[in-house]
Length: 156
Length: 115
Image (tube, rainbow over all chains, first blue to last red; front, side):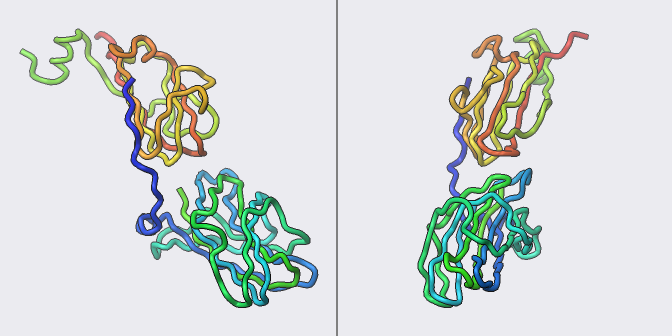
């Protein structure tokens, strides 16, 4: 049997933007007493696509710690889908969701301490690969904190 | 005097051939699935991984990442010919991928039935 290798698998953000596979969204959730404001990017079950999270930039109104957690449990409220970075092309399959949680879900994979009203990337670029039914949550560790975050990802 | 590739092939091998593309399916997920039917008329096949996930090929139903021929993502391919790989070319073949909905191209060359 004759075998040939494939091309090197390098994901380049600009290449994916030009090929309509790059997406962005900026969900937010207000503060609520006694709960954690959580934002999630979710690859829906049986979606038929693989989501690779490129970057997450959270911002909170009071200084504190923000965590990134792998959690496949869909948050309660649908915020929407992602906008295609090739303007006018189809929206994303992945969805953004929000919920006020009693405690952090899933498994923590990143954390960052943020000054008030500043935004920085949490974790490295190309943070996680989400198969169908898998999700990634960003949330402050203190209760009663509003949060916004920019999510950037590609879908294959 | 042979005039076409088909004539040359018939002169050399004594058979005429035909082609089938993706006869069973065009994608696979994380469970092993058939890619080529058992067909003794098959004299060769070409398998190309069009996805970004690794795939593993084999003529056994329990093909897996630890029991399969690795076909790399992004255009990795496997080519089997009857005069190099023997009867196995006509066996039932299975494939499995590292991710869901992984596309591939499966092209078979079959001996045409005698008229």
